[in-house]
Each structure stands twice: as structure tokens, then as C-alpha cells.
Length: 338
Image (tube, rainbow, N blue to C red; front, side, top):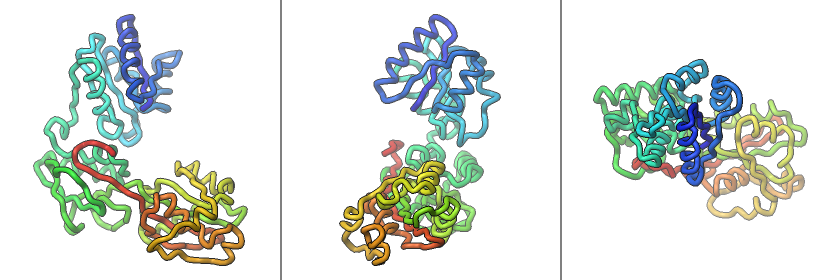
């Protein structure tokens, strides 16, 4: 987590240095506030970092971040600490931004009291947005997530269906169900379905992409979208892309992956052809002649996923081939992210 620390007095600055010395060994990247005005420093930290920690009054923090607040799925964590380190307050983006967890962590490090005001935390109920963040699940609708929380706070038990096993005791506020029948619930799935349920999408889908030389970025994206639609797979679940090393620097493919934030892995033809097992890959002598492997997209998808399950067979359009494989998704209810 990249954390920017703000302090305004000598005692605040001493606490800032002490806190930085405690956070850095725990793997956090800690930055001082940028030179210039508080408004400029806050704007930069809001734009580039994961968390802003203000050592001082809540009012100072509120005035600094108020013009910057956009939405709960994009805002970074904002935490306030008083200069005596007695109170550590989660001010903004408690769940998705991680402010509640950071508040608790800092309170333990400084021997202070964590102040958490989110209702589900106070009542020990299931917080769907927090659980999704911990387990790298994309939330398909923030409005539905709000409805889940509202219903749980009102005393309802929300059904939860998952395509993946979930270990640990089921928390208060939800009940597990073996199907997605019913007017409303939570579904953990890569697959889109036209219903009113909130869907949490595991980021464990890996694409395999092959293309002819000089393929355009629009053609690549159109092929990917059409291929995913064929199986009603959600693009929010894409965790990476695999291809053959011959295509590792194909300009359109590189640009597409960079824009979408998809890590690109390239495999040698020999490595692609090493794959054996139950999966029956499509085979093309033409592709073998050009690339050295009889199939790029299916084999690359499976390799990129850690040899997971092929869930979308070769799809071809306009000189582009796309396949997808499903990697592992480890889910649990004990509050720990794996």
C-alpha cells in the first residue's frame, strides 16, 4: 500500500517519522506529503496513492479531501490520527479503499484506539464490499452491493451462491445456497446471468490470444469481447493474457494489455507444446508452421492460468484467435485474504 503521511506541527512530524518507521517494515510504501500547499499535496496523493494519513484534526483532513471525493470504488483510504496517537479514525473509503484495515493496523502499531464507524463492522455483520476486496473479487454493481448491506442491517439473511468452494464459518447476515434461484442474492461467478443478484467476479480468468502480424487493436478487442460473450464470461474477471513469444511485442496486443491492466505472458512454442493431459486442444498445421506450436490461444490460456481449466475454446475472428482458462480462486470466510 502506498501511504502519504501529512503532519502540521512539530509533534505531528515526530509522530509521522515514528509511524513511517513502523509501517515500512510491514511492506508499505510510505511517502511524505509533496511540497506545496495542502490542497496540492492531497490531490496528488489522492490521484497516485492508496491511502492518505493525516496527523492532526479531522477538520483539516475533511477540507483537504472534500473536493476530491468521487466514488467509493475509486477513492483511496483516508485516516486521521490525533497528535497524541490516542485515536486512529477511519474517515473515508473504509471497505473498498482499505481505510478500516489500515486504521486497525496503525492503532495496534501506535497503541491507540481504532475508531470505525461503518455499520456492518460495528454490528459484526458480513460486509460484502470488504470481503470482495480481500479476495480480489470485482463487484458488478455498487448499487446492488449497497442493497445487500442495507438488507443485512435490516435483519435479512442474504443467500450466497458460489461457483467455488468457500472455507470457514458462514458469517452473520448470509446463508449459503446451492443454486441462484430467488429474487435477490449474491453470486460468486465468472459467468453473467440476467438476474437481479449482485455478482462478485473472481479475477482468475486468463485469456490466450493469437493474431496475425499487424493486427489492429480494435480487431483484437472486438474478438476478445465476442469470444467472452460466446460463453457469457465477464471481462472483469480477466487476470492476465498469454501468447506465444513470437507475439510478445506485437504492438496492438501490447497496447491492449497495457490499457486494460492485463499482465502479458509469452511462452515459447516448445513450452506450449509440452502441455498434456485431459484437455484436447485444437490443432492447426498452418499455425504450427508460422509459430512452432499447433495452437497458440488455448495452450497459452491454460499456461497463463497455472494450468487451469479451459473454459472457452478457440474463437477466431478477423485474424485473431481467443481462448480462456480459469485459474484457481481461493475463498474463505475468516476475514483473511489469500
